Amino acid sequence: MAEKFFGSPIPNPQAVALFSRGLDSILAVKVLQQQHLAIQGIFFTTPFFNTGIRGQENEFIAKIAKDYGIPLCVIDISTEFLELLAAPAHGYGKNFNPCIDCKLLMVRNAKTYAAKWSASFIVTGEVLGQRPFSQRRDTMRIIERDSETTGMLLRPLSAKLLTETIPELEGLVDRTKLFDFSGRGRKPQLRLAAELGITNFPTPAGGCLLTDPAYARRIKTLYTHERHPDARDVEILKYGRFYNFPPAGFLVVGRNQSENQQLLQLADKETIIMRLGEIPGPIGIFSGSEEQMPAAASLLIRHSKARNKADVLISWKQGNRSGSFKQPKIIDC
Image (cartoon, rainbow, N blue to C red; front, side, top):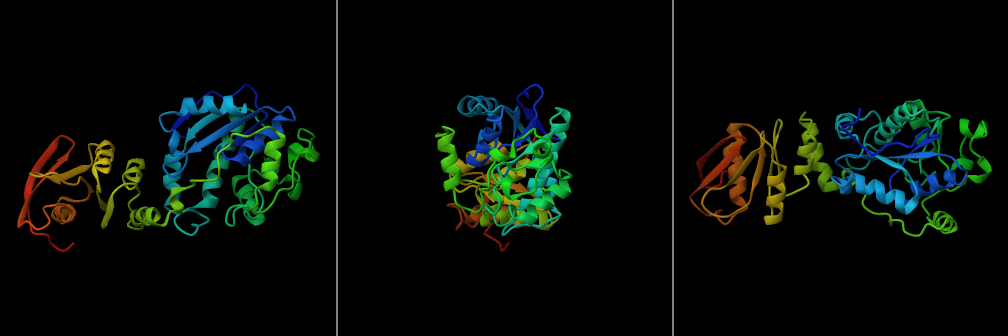
């Protein structure tokens, strides 16, 4: 299922909660903990969101436990996410963001872990009408239907505006202590946070990288040409200048020394690293055919101090292979 799993679940949780570290997800868990329910948080990561804790997962788990008293596991779903991104059943948002299918993926994973840990329901911090695409009433029903979680998916912050769930009907959860929040305003959540003594919560920010128009175009280009990028490709495309090399290749050229270093760190044995052989200049990370290397070299030269030279020595390395060639004055690409 998931690539990597961090943390240890609490014994016998009664529910699992999708945790985003935002205020809504914190409140959703805390109001149920106020009812003396054992809630296990799950924090999903992909290359496009929640990447800031990479390499520090256990420290993050400890911090959430200390700050909010919420037990957490971190689960990397990158491989599954990259697969669904090729053809999400419910389409994309404004850019290349598959919001409904993303939520479905997380809920389905949460359902699997709930069954594994014998938890009886799933919790999210969703607020009805807060997001125009993924938190409409009809969309919420679609998520329940397609994830087969109807009746077991509880949204405590908007529960009084939604159909009663099984844990409410069975008396495990006291519906009268849940809420009727709706819309994009934050005042009700801020009041509740103050009542619960929660003061150190992050401000709304960041979000999914696939909603960024420039980055979304890069990723979309690769999928359009039937190349399914892996997690390393996705990271590389976060840097530099991007050039498409159909049918399945691309070139990324570093814009400064910092980006050059980032690109070198991301390169693997399959990656072609290109650089100027005789003078300092940008690093090029190339994924394409040998026949396309001259065109890639021309683009590399175009962004260097050698752009006006008659020919330029280009060095390249791919795993244990390496070589060099003279590239004539810039050609059209």
